[in-house]
Image 1 (cartoon, rainbow, N blue to C red):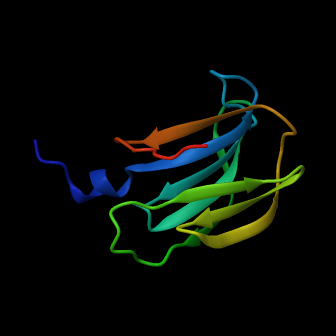
Image 2 (tube, rainbow, N blue to C red):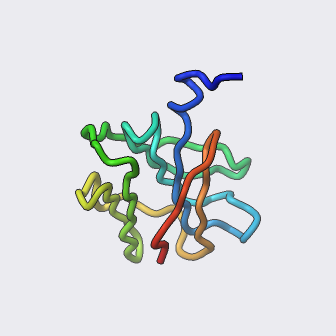
Image 3 (cartoon, one colour):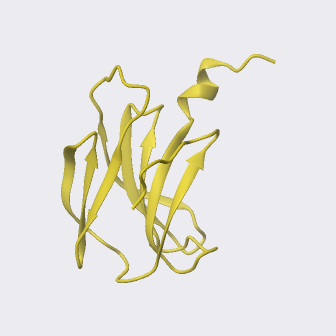
Length: 115
């Protein structure tokens, strides 16, 4: 069976920080690439681990086959950078401590140079 265009539009990855536990994502702050890297969304996961979107931004087209998603975490806020460009600054964090992780949506996502 051949994959459709829609299948590829939803293959993206995300970073999640300050979750309640290694296998629980509740209360985690989530920043995700969406629509095959055409936009970035941010928000948090509620107690039922459902994504609550707090904002988003379109991303400029790129000829690169991958995007670089980075978060700069401060005590109470975080900044989002994509391909080295600041997308949003001073966003409030919902938690003060917790785990970090990576999420893949509807297909493979490759993570490199994670630190």
